[in-house]
Length: 451
Ligand code: BGC
Image (cartoon, rainbow, N blue to C red; front, side, top):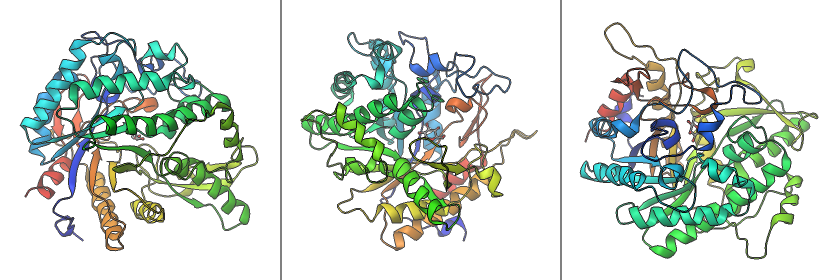
């Protein structure tokens, strides 16, 4: 099937996405103070691995310098025919100390960004928190301190006050499982914390924040469209042995159900993950994880294969790396399996009263090279998108519909613990010169989205 035959509904939303810590750069400019990622990436060793070096400093410091280039980048976005843009707000650019005095230059930046988008007929979709907590708040315990509920409310209030006249679409958190599990249990993401207590406290507070903030935004204006985003991984068992099948259920509860089900009002998946019972100790009578959202954001990149593993604490399940399974992989070493999204949508659609779904991140990292004539011919990425969208349409035919897609990412950027090596962009960025080259995949979208 050629891409021209990919017939999506005419009102389907087509956007591209970035996040502040990954794309903005300008870390110490115009009053911004450090986020936990600025600190974390400065450490030489981050517990399990070093942020990989590939000839350039792997800190979000420089990155794609979107802060200085946003006008030109929005022109590229427009040229590629996208009509929506998902970005996040750097908390420590707006409130350098996390709470208290506002940094006017931070407000000015996002005001200009939002105005520029609107002037170019591109709808802003704002993510409040994409993993970059101010260091000042981390010093007070960050996500493991229940005060995060008040800090987050204050930050949200500032955003609503300054941007709520022009931004209608709000996403509260980006993939809470990542910053709770990778950041507070495994220690491989900022803030580099480990252990079950940190994980459970951070999880409890993130569950509360994603629901409380939804209510806070709706109370200001019921017309705002509010949701939050979830990672969603298609998980299959390594074998048909009952032990592997049970392990797969536990992995699925952790990867896919922990944050989504409480949000939908279904509570925690305690029967598969009994250790979640310990959260009760931190719970107050007023705590409510449920929120009647306008939409949910789903972000699926791959499939994982799960296997029983007695040594894995708490979930007794391990993941069999894609590299060992002899399957095609991306530069992240993730299996390339576009039908994962079909299975995810089918599975999620079993939930009753599901709000509309947006695919708030879709993309793949490959080892893109710039040819002598200055072209980046990323055919693998084009194929990935074609096949992925075929699977989204397959889901639509079975009534598992979605309302829109945000491509990850507009620009090559800082890929967290992997540094600058994996490139996800539709636009190649030379991190030394900041030169942009629209990749063939970007041109593919330009053609595909042309009206
Ligand atoms: C995150 C992005 C990240 C992408 C690829 C998502 O989990 O939201 O920030 O770059 O995955 O790893």
